[in-house]
Image (tube, rainbow, N blue to C red; front, side):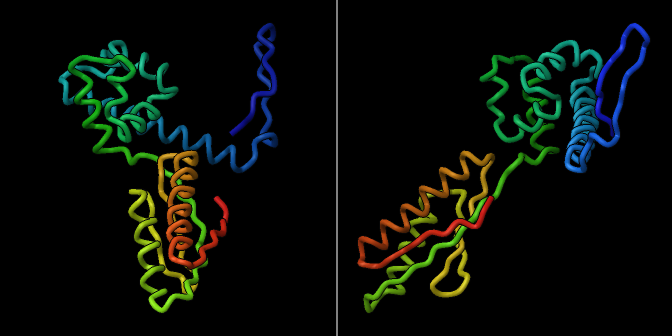
Length: 196
């Protein structure tokens, strides 16, 4: 894995550096390479199901979707997560349904996970029930939330979402719901963030 420092086309030389590539960049680039190899195999599956050569499919739509989604794997990944995205981007044809099927069967949509914990207390005689109700209301406010018992008075809130922006919004909504519910019944809830 090297970084291109410069190109001298008159001499036909390319200056490369091994030291300029850190471990993170190296892992990321290797993963991109693996993903694109996988995407090429998936394209072969699409071609086989349609009874066409892969080269024909690249000409029909492959190069075009690479421009739209950035990479071929990016297209498969996006379609696996949001099958309607091809039509939203204006694509149509007999290949669309086959592409969606292959993407759903072979690609796990990306996701991120964030968490933190709630510290909850309620002095009411039925405080345990009120805490339980607040936690259930918080969990019900999002399909992406899981609330786990750590040990009284702490409860972990875990959000799994397609990206950090959505995850942060969901976490905010869930914790706000729990805190509001606790305040309504005379209890107290404080959210602590543990990092991304």
